[in-house]
Length: 75
Image 1 (cartoon, helix red, strand yellow):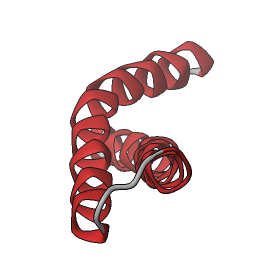
Image 2: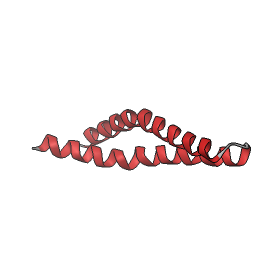
Image 3: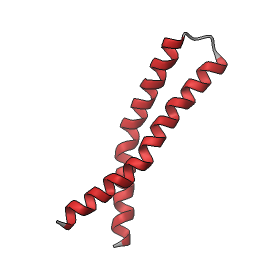
């Protein structure tokens, strides 16, 4: 039972870290393409989704492992 509680805590803390990272990177991409180029709206939004998805894929395992290490270090 305790293992399930620890995993739930890790998941809850991790999502609060990697979700803003991926959303933020997507929004930064949108802002950069809006102000620096003459790209169509579809390309900017598609790129924003693509960058956000890729950063989510990359940041999830990194953040989860760090949160696990941090949580196990406390106990």
